[in-house]
Length: 143
Image (cartoon, rainbow, N blue to C red; front, side, top):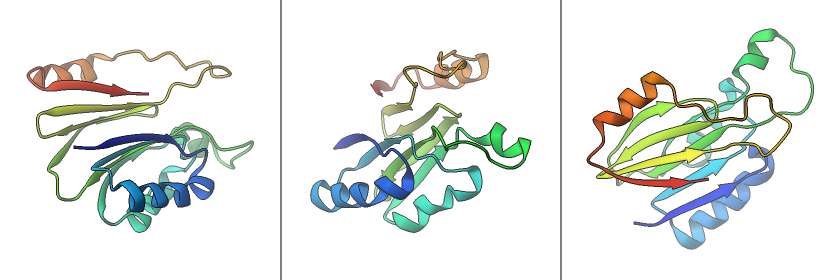
């Protein structure tokens, strides 16, 4: 099984590079960070990469809920799983997505290095309970 991780620095700029990596290396699992899409635009992954199941989230939920967007977009993670594999989403939050693929538990995390007041990854009770169910799986973490 092949796994790749890539910071796309915005979907509009990075999706062509992701496509090229897919054509060249055909990874089974592709972990993407910083797609910068709003929740309404996450569908772009499904449309652009139909050969993959797309599990992810936007870091811009709170900004969108406040009204008109101001400033530059930020954050967001997406995990692409080849459709030939069986996958189950365990949890999706603003800064991470956890997916079970076979006997692997894949954790795709984006933690900005500076400039964010909420950059610390705090494990919440719900996520801990969900992970506990999968304690027999192998754990692989990519950042």
